[in-house]
Amino acid sequence: MRHLLREWLAGAGYTIYDARASAPEVRVSAVIASICSMELAREVLIPRLRREYPDASVIALCSRARSGLSSDGALARALGVARVMAKPLRREELLLTLAALIGPSARQGRP
Image (tube, rainbow, N blue to C red; front, side, top):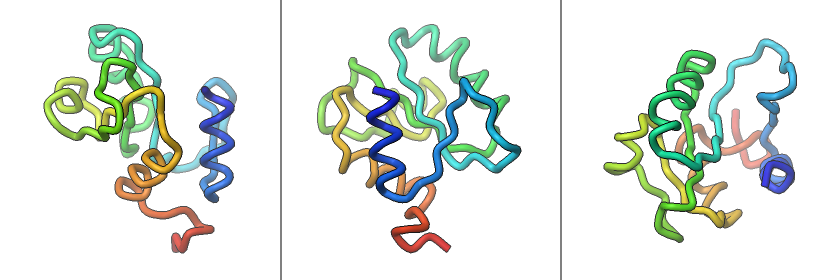
């Protein structure tokens, strides 16, 4: 999934940094996190992401979310994220969500 997301986002013109690799000191606009356990995400993962990337919009990918739904409702609020998106993920939904949260990529007209 990580490689597919990189391909989709790079193909759309976004700059991608892998959290497991050391990235240069840059402002991170969005973080995409795959979650398996809601409790673990809410108690450990999301707070850690908030500390490491305080200005970033967090998108949680979750197999428990309803397919075709990009939610900023109750589940997102409970997790403390900007959006919850269902897995399997659709490219167009991800790009629309990202553009809504942080704006279009440079290739798509980002200043």
